[in-house]
Image (cartoon, rainbow, N blue to C red; front, side):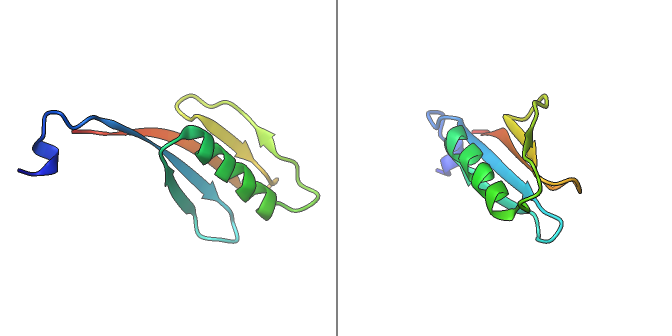
Length: 85
């Protein structure tokens, strides 16, 4: 029996951290806890922003976290996704 055929297999929520920086390829990481995904994004911004840039957090419907860290649009976000049975 395939794992996806099991009726007792619980649905799983995952949290996708997406980091977009104009000097690097987009970075996508998957987490099981939203707090860890958000903390990852915050560390990414600190490591990649210039000392003259400010981090601006904002709420956007459908995303758990969103922030920009440059005037050129570099940003991070966290989304919740649910795996189906």
